Image (cartoon, rainbow, N blue to C red; front, side, top):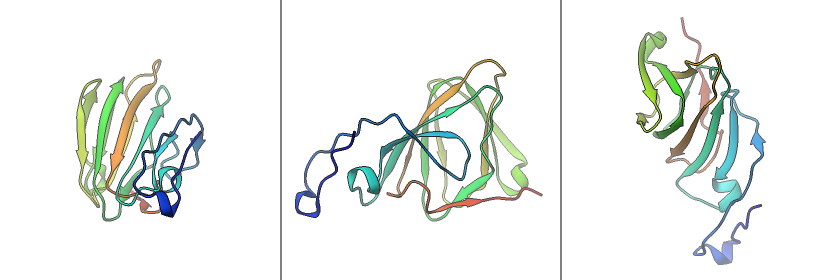
Length: 136
Protein backbone atom coordinates (compact mmCIF):
# COMPACT_ATOMS: atom_id res chain seq x y z
CA UNK A 1 0.00 0.00 0.00
CA UNK A 2 1.39 3.40 -0.96
CA UNK A 3 -0.07 6.79 -0.32
CA UNK A 4 1.85 8.76 -2.93
CA UNK A 5 1.58 12.55 -2.86
CA UNK A 6 0.24 14.45 -5.83
CA UNK A 7 2.23 17.38 -7.25
CA UNK A 8 0.07 19.68 -5.11
CA UNK A 9 1.01 17.75 -1.97
CA UNK A 10 4.79 17.53 -2.47
CA UNK A 11 5.37 18.52 1.16
CA UNK A 12 3.46 15.68 2.75
CA UNK A 13 4.55 12.56 4.63
CA UNK A 14 4.23 9.32 2.67
CA UNK A 15 3.99 5.80 4.01
CA UNK A 16 4.74 2.76 1.84
CA UNK A 17 3.56 -0.60 3.09
CA UNK A 18 4.42 -3.02 0.35
CA UNK A 19 5.67 -6.50 0.31
CA UNK A 20 5.87 -7.10 -3.42
CA UNK A 21 9.08 -7.95 -5.24
CA UNK A 22 9.91 -5.84 -8.29
CA UNK A 23 11.80 -6.89 -11.42
CA UNK A 24 15.41 -5.77 -11.41
CA UNK A 25 18.66 -6.04 -13.31
CA UNK A 26 20.46 -7.47 -10.27
CA UNK A 27 18.13 -10.52 -10.27
CA UNK A 28 17.56 -10.42 -6.50
CA UNK A 29 14.40 -10.24 -4.43
CA UNK A 30 14.03 -6.47 -4.07
CA UNK A 31 11.03 -5.27 -2.09
CA UNK A 32 9.54 -1.95 -3.08
CA UNK A 33 10.22 0.80 -0.59
CA UNK A 34 10.71 4.53 -1.06
CA UNK A 35 11.29 5.82 -4.60
CA UNK A 36 10.03 8.33 -7.14
CA UNK A 37 7.40 5.82 -8.20
CA UNK A 38 6.08 4.96 -4.72
CA UNK A 39 6.58 8.16 -2.76
CA UNK A 40 7.37 10.91 -5.22
CA UNK A 41 10.99 11.25 -4.08
CA UNK A 42 13.30 13.51 -6.02
CA UNK A 43 16.75 12.50 -4.78
CA UNK A 44 16.68 9.13 -2.98
CA UNK A 45 15.37 5.60 -2.91
CA UNK A 46 15.39 2.89 -0.27
CA UNK A 47 14.33 -0.74 -0.36
CA UNK A 48 14.90 -4.15 1.19
CA UNK A 49 16.91 -6.87 -0.57
CA UNK A 50 16.73 -10.59 0.27
CA UNK A 51 19.41 -12.94 -1.06
CA UNK A 52 18.57 -16.65 -1.05
CA UNK A 53 21.05 -19.17 0.35
CA UNK A 54 24.05 -19.31 -1.99
CA UNK A 55 22.55 -16.55 -4.11
CA UNK A 56 24.36 -13.74 -5.89
CA UNK A 57 23.36 -10.61 -7.73
CA UNK A 58 24.25 -10.11 -11.35
CA UNK A 59 27.44 -8.00 -11.55
CA UNK A 60 26.52 -4.35 -12.05
CA UNK A 61 27.37 -0.73 -11.35
CA UNK A 62 25.30 2.38 -10.66
CA UNK A 63 25.52 5.35 -13.00
CA UNK A 64 26.00 8.67 -11.20
CA UNK A 65 24.79 7.71 -7.72
CA UNK A 66 26.12 6.34 -4.45
CA UNK A 67 24.74 3.39 -2.51
CA UNK A 68 24.58 2.80 1.26
CA UNK A 69 23.70 -0.63 2.61
CA UNK A 70 22.87 -1.86 6.12
CA UNK A 71 23.17 -5.63 6.56
CA UNK A 72 20.19 -6.91 8.58
CA UNK A 73 21.08 -10.61 8.61
CA UNK A 74 23.46 -13.13 7.10
CA UNK A 75 26.98 -12.89 5.72
CA UNK A 76 27.65 -11.32 2.33
CA UNK A 77 30.80 -11.02 0.25
CA UNK A 78 30.93 -8.02 -2.05
CA UNK A 79 33.19 -8.53 -5.06
CA UNK A 80 34.06 -5.19 -6.60
CA UNK A 81 36.34 -3.12 -8.79
CA UNK A 82 37.88 -3.83 -12.15
CA UNK A 83 37.13 -7.45 -13.02
CA UNK A 84 35.51 -7.90 -9.57
CA UNK A 85 38.97 -8.91 -8.30
CA UNK A 86 38.67 -7.22 -4.91
CA UNK A 87 36.35 -8.42 -2.16
CA UNK A 88 35.09 -7.57 1.29
CA UNK A 89 32.95 -9.63 3.68
CA UNK A 90 30.05 -8.16 5.65
CA UNK A 91 27.79 -9.44 8.41
CA UNK A 92 24.68 -8.31 10.27
CA UNK A 93 25.11 -4.81 11.68
CA UNK A 94 27.66 -3.67 9.08
CA UNK A 95 27.21 -0.54 6.97
CA UNK A 96 28.58 -0.66 3.42
CA UNK A 97 29.24 2.25 1.02
CA UNK A 98 29.57 1.74 -2.74
CA UNK A 99 30.71 4.79 -4.75
CA UNK A 100 29.04 5.71 -8.03
CA UNK A 101 30.32 3.74 -11.02
CA UNK A 102 32.11 0.97 -9.07
CA UNK A 103 31.29 -2.48 -10.50
CA UNK A 104 30.20 -4.90 -7.78
CA UNK A 105 28.47 -8.19 -7.05
CA UNK A 106 27.10 -9.22 -3.64
CA UNK A 107 27.15 -12.95 -2.86
CA UNK A 108 25.40 -14.70 0.04
CA UNK A 109 28.10 -16.76 1.79
CA UNK A 110 25.63 -19.20 3.38
CA UNK A 111 24.25 -22.26 1.64
CA UNK A 112 21.43 -22.55 4.21
CA UNK A 113 20.35 -19.04 5.32
CA UNK A 114 19.04 -15.98 3.54
CA UNK A 115 20.81 -12.65 3.85
CA UNK A 116 18.83 -9.40 4.11
CA UNK A 117 19.79 -5.76 3.80
CA UNK A 118 18.33 -2.27 3.54
CA UNK A 119 19.69 -0.32 0.56
CA UNK A 120 19.56 3.46 0.17
CA UNK A 121 20.67 5.44 -2.88
CA UNK A 122 20.82 9.07 -3.87
CA UNK A 123 18.79 8.29 -6.98
CA UNK A 124 14.98 8.36 -6.84
CA UNK A 125 14.49 5.57 -9.38
CA UNK A 126 14.83 1.91 -8.54
CA UNK A 127 16.47 0.58 -11.69
CA UNK A 128 16.90 3.16 -14.44
CA UNK A 129 20.58 3.79 -13.65
CA UNK A 130 21.70 0.23 -12.90
CA UNK A 131 24.24 -0.91 -15.50
CA UNK A 132 25.02 -4.64 -16.09
CA UNK A 133 28.76 -5.37 -15.80
CA UNK A 134 30.70 -8.06 -17.61
CA UNK A 135 33.63 -9.22 -15.47
CA UNK A 136 36.59 -10.34 -17.55
